[in-house]
Image (cartoon, rainbow, N blue to C red; front, side, top):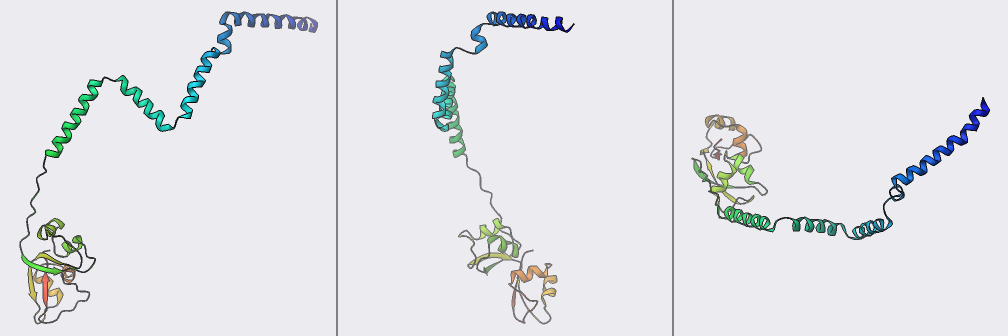
Amino acid sequence: MKESESSNLPLVTLFVLIGTVVALLFVGYEHFLGPETSSLAKAEKVQVDEDELPMEDIVSSTVIRDTTSTDTTSVDQDAVDLDQQKKEAEAEKVPEVAVEEPSGKSFTYQADPGESAETIAKHFGLTVDQLKAMNPAGVKGGSKVKVKVQAIHIVGKGDVLRVVAEKYHISKKALMDANHKKEDVTMRGEELVIPLQ
């Protein structure tokens, strides 16, 4: 039985080889091996040319090809529309909102060096916009700044900071900040600025 199986092996191999040759002829020799060598050479040349270009040139050449294929009249119309929108935006004036000056007494405050407009406004219970409206020349640390206050309190007998703060319905800290006080000490006859807070 082994001899008959081994004798069939060369016959099967022969049929497989003949089938492969027929298939090659049927499909076509060129398609089986790949594209024509001339087409392959053209593709390699294009690939080499693009590889040699810097990336910016490849992008710009792609963009140029895309824009030339679009309708030039629509591009021109888009440019005109964009210019019109720019002119309208420039012509449109944003109305300035008038900042109301708070009620209270005017006071000239000597700002510490390095003190910002935000800090000064906070000390006196003002917004930064209100402070800037009262000082059109600008607010700088170390300069004199116009502010609004509730009152100027002259310290009398028994006037400690806590009592003065309660009298004007403000916090003791706000009173100390507005008067550059580091300690809870007052002297008779001293003027204390009472902030709007």
